[in-house]
Length: 152
Picture 1: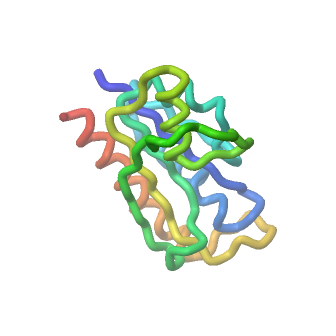
Picture 2: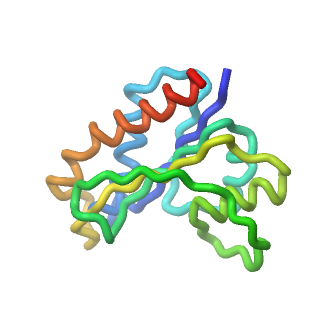
């Protein structure tokens, strides 16, 4: 059975920035695939490279300040071919995939970044209405990616 990892990040105290965490929580309630780990954090850090190296599919989930509020975008991501250079305390998906391959000589066969456009990033725990309404569709997209990969 293929192993999968969903890595959600965001700050639940900064409005729509917390949507990744909400998607992960909804996914936990609906996803019953035993080989899927769902992980949440405020930011992606180098320590995640080990987990990433051990799975067949990785799905990164985050808010976007550039997409229209509530719009969902999914795109494949790949490890970069460049050297790692300086590693900071937070990384983007491409650099995490590169780090996993660099340190562990392995990475997922497939990786995706799912982002949801946000409009409110001010202090507060509430999501804007369009972002809140996008959560079920985002969960469905993730479940679809996982099911497609498990069948392949």
